[in-house]
Image 1 (cartoon, helix red, strand yellow):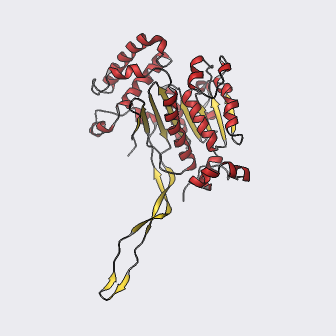
Image 2: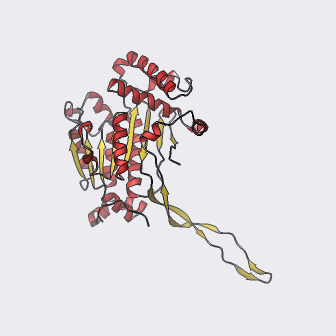
Image 3: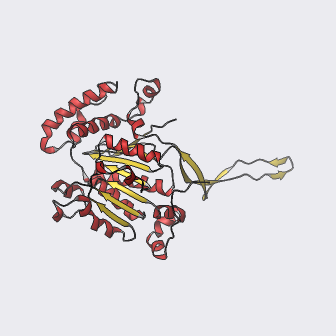
Length: 349
């Protein structure tokens, strides 16, 4: 039996059935019911947060809490489509509420202007999934460890210029179902020489639901890989350089309390080089692993990159809550210069 995540058995009304008709046809009524019974916390209403909020509201979760203490700036208006241009100086979560709610009146959207750093542990326990954007490494690790202990799904993501990433931790045992083509067993026909044997065939017109389980590691485990071990060295070739660049950018955010800014390009570029050298040395990996090219492309949030990564991140939250289809394990990286995404796996096994 699959252990369903909802705390109640939500009823889909006729109005909701009409609203979500396409989705119900795509992933089934049971999956939509599980979505309808889920509450999600989204921290950070920048460009990426807006994309994720849109996708979750349209998918039809029960409730979405928008948490952000930052104020709307001119840059926010360029990358974030939920805030009006006239909202500069207002709280980002509250300024995003009206347009977010209008996307789907059936979802309860709530704005919280508080600081996530000030939230007690109990605050996070009211949600089925927590999505963190624009947060420090220490905060993400803290929330991820807390939620892991209470079977709450955790997602992290950020956009740095042309680059973006997503991380998810769905727990040590995440159950889901996957639709597979039905295999038709062979039927033996009697002949003069005895029974005729036939091979099993795949029937493209019929499918069956297969129950599966996936195991995830914590963010702390994913970021604290010991690259001096033989197992880690063997996996180095399939580890995208974006993974190490993420270490650099998170360290920059920790040291400066912000991300690289175009207004201080020269100063931030120099600091990024220094942090890059320090991080690669601390990780005991080659200093040639990450060249200077990345520095020119990691400033500001770019709307097209937000759309791609936000689409993937939103889809992964929907898949996890609906327990439908195989999830990413655990990282997704995107490089807008190449126009392609990359997935890397770090797990307990």
